[in-house]
Structures are given as structure tokens and as C-alpha cells.
Image: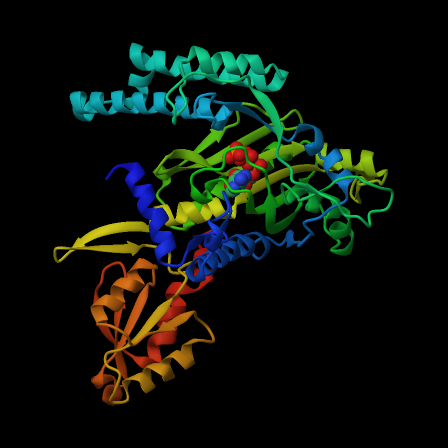
Length: 511
Ligand code: ATP
């Protein structure tokens, strides 16, 4: 199956099984805005909870926060978003489509990377067991030429973005012969900057007409509350503040389903530490965050680190965690060492001291910050893409979401074999016993086989069939989603089995 095909299948599966719907669909939808359905909301809550608990429960020195979406307009001046939260955009004059110039270039680089990969695979076949991929990459002239091309593009892109000389980026697009994916033409406009913040007006705002913004990131809510939390929580450095919440960006090109949306959710943690220790913490969080991703069961080779080409002027290290989506490796999470930039700017703009008093040294200073920032919706898409599996079973295709049981929307389906002879009543009793601890689902329509398949399609790890013997023997058949094996278990053991496999603590213990 081609990767495009796979992606289309995942998108339609998400809709068909109540995970993701286009926003306001009866009015034709709203570009790049989506709603989460009955199963999507559960999966999303579970992912959010896994993140939040891993931050706040597993770390004595990390606490939560829930700050408002609206913030004082000066926050966004101080943070640099009013002046600098721009993306370089370019239009194709023939298709009239607008693109992010840097993304066009990155996509082009990815194609070259794929060529390198093909060369390596061909050579690996030729040389057999003795093949050394690293050696091949550093000696094969064609591969070296490709790599050099990628590196050159990186440095031109970096120079163009950092110096603001957007002509360099346009020239790069032209010189590389990058064409519009729609029209196939190279008829480009100049590259221009475009601010991504949505603005509105709060008419009761004292002092006039300053624009009010929908927050483009959750981090600033943490920065402006840092001293409140530090003082009221009597926090000592190093410590962290974690929050999840909506963010809004007027993305130039919203594409790839929930990958790039105008309204999305972030999960961010700002870790405040002593100046000079930030790179140690940066490395710590880089590893810790990768471990968190792997705990969900995704193999290591689906992830990679990607160092930032363009470091923001205030950052002294930044890396993305990328995942192999069906459309290529793309960012899911960023880990950034932001120095004292944000707190320093808020001190300057608010006129309020935001210093930490260190009782050990009797010194006051602005802490340094390492941030981890992940998009919940991208994580959701990653999770769906990773879990989506098609298998041949008895000449039929079984579609199953192999989700980790702790994040599956429904933990267990209770299925009475027939709608009579007391089976629905016994199923109802089991349901009533389990519902306080687990999201359980009960259904008596259609054949058991069909009901199993519907549960496979939403990733339900366990199905329990209640049959006539259940009434006399007080036991049921439990069927495991991935192996499809079935066994007979006592009804009294159900809760224990479900707890063991589906509790979030099983996931947290891996960290
Ligand atoms: P990109 O380069 O893809 O635009 P970014 O570097 O601007 O992302 P950050 O500002 O670092 O992203 O935001 C942190 C995380 O928030 C990203 O890693 C991503 O998971 C998520 N995110 C950012 N923008 C969007 C969006 N428009 N839709 C969905 N998720 C997003």
C-alpha cells in the first residue's frame, strides 16, 4: 500500500469510527478545524492524562497550571510574537495556492533524503552482511553529493531566515527547481512574512484599543505565573510548571488533516533552573521525552531527533522529536533551551521583578528555562497512524487499532450472545460492576463476529462474551484484541485483569 493510500485510509477510518470529524460539517466544514468524536475524545483525554501525570505525578518538583487563553496584550509584545511570530509565505501564480516557503524547501530536502535511503538499500542488497551503512554514506560519491545538497540548502535557509533576506529563500526555491505540487509550475511570487496570531478586541480594556490575541502558545501563561507558583508552592530551583490547553495560529497552509490546525492543543512544561545548568537539563529532557514516546509501544526507528537549523536568537539549544508519519518524518515535539529570555522580557515589559532568591547563595537571579512542547493533536495523529493495522484473517481483512490498552478509548466490550435467557441481564450486571473503574461498552446487536470487528476498529483491548454457561458457571469468554485468542475466565476476575492491563500506572511505571 502506498503511503498516501495509507494516510487516506487513516483519515477515513478516523471519521467512520467516531474519532475525528470536520468542524461544523453540516455547513461544509471549516478549513483546518476539526472536532473529536466519541472515541477521539476518549483517546485524546487519555493521551493528555498520560502526559500530565508523567510530568506532575512522577516528578516531585513539577506542578500543574491552567492559565487563561486571553492574556494582557503586552504579554505578546514582550514575548516577541507581535513583531516576530511570522512564517515566510510564497504563492504560486498559476494555482493561486499559498505555501510556507521553508516547508516547500524541507519537503524537497526530504525527497533527496529518500534518494539517499534508496541508494543505501540498493547497496545493502549488493554487499550483503558485511555492509556498513555509515561507511557507505561517508564514501559513496553520489550519496555524499546528495547530502551536500541538503546541507547547502539548510545553510541558505538559515541565512535567509536569520537575516530577513527573503530573496535568498526565493532564489533557493527557483534554483532547486521546486515546483508547485498543484500546478507543477515554477511561477512563484516573492517570499513575504505573515503573522500567525489571531486578534480580537476586548472593549472593556482600560486605556483603549490595543488588540487582544488568542494565545498562539500556552507557554506564556506559565512564564507570567512563574513567581505566583514559586512563592505559593514554595518551589526551589530546579522546578517545572506543566500545562495543557488550546492554542491558535493562523497557519498559512493548513494541511495533512489534524497535523497543522488553526485551533489545536499544546502540552508544555517549562523547567526553571540555575543559569549554567540549562544544557544539562536540556539533555536530560531530550532523553526523558523520547523515553515517554517509546513507552507507548512505538518502535525506536519511527522516531528521530532533528536539531534546529535556525536557532531562535534567545535559544542556546533546540531539537525536535520527529515521527515517521505516512507523509514523512515530521515534528511532534520540541525541546528548547530558552535561556532567561522570556522571564527577562516580562521583567522589562511589566516592570515587576521576576527574580528567584537563592537561599543557599543569598543571590537573586532570573532562572534559565528548558521547555518541552508537544502538540496533543499531532500526538493523536501519530498514535492513530502507528496503531492502524490491516490483517488478513480467514480470507477477510481485519482492521484493528493496536493501541496501548491504557490509552484505548473503550477498555472492554461486554457482549451478550443472545438477547434472551437472562444473558442481557447478566451482561448489564457486569457492566454496572465495571463502569466505576473503566470505560466499558455493552452491545447486543449483530453477530458476535461483527461486534468483535467493530471493537477491533476502535482498539478495544478486551471483549467479553456472556453465554448460557455464564449463568451457571459464573464465567465468560474473554477475547484479546491483538492475538484474537479467547479464554474462559471467572466473572470475579474481570476487574483484576482489566486493572492490570489498562491502568495508566502500567504506562507510568515504564518511565
Ligand atoms: P511547525 O514548525 O510544525 O509549525 P512549530 O515549530 O511552530 O511547528 P512549536 O511552536 O514548537 O511548533 O509548537 C510545539 C508543538 O505544537 C509542535 O511540536 C506541534 O506538535 C504543535 N503544533 C504547533 N503548531 C501546530 C498546529 N498548527 N497544529 C497542530 N499542532 C501544532
